[in-house]
Image 1 (spheres, rainbow, N blue to C red):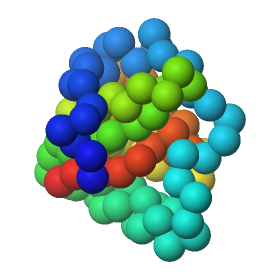
Image 2: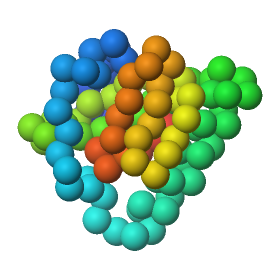
Image 3: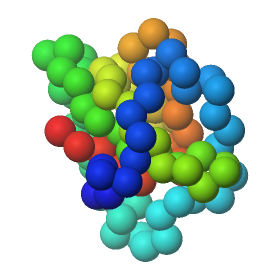
Image 4: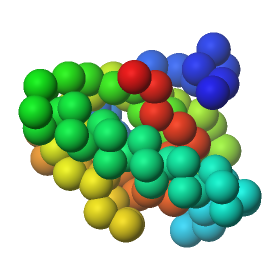
Amino acid sequence: MAMENSSLISKENLNKFRFSAADVLKGEWEKVYRRFSLQRAEKLGNSFKGKVKIIFRTSENETKMVDTTVWSATDDYVSLKGGMTIPVKAILGIEF
């Protein structure tokens, strides 16, 4: 994942960003792997309070990263510790 090209932000600043309605991933396999990674991140967060790095793209085409605990991951949104959410379509990848 292009972690070196993304700027780290705090999860409290997530509400300052807008997200595109279009999915940032094009390939079907990439989307399946993202779903699998989000499920893993959710288990890590709920079982061990472990953090992951979520790399996402804003509607302004900026790549950002947040280091956080994932509480839940649905088909559409990821809920983070502190009540913040990120649309799944905006997520480029997850690093453990």
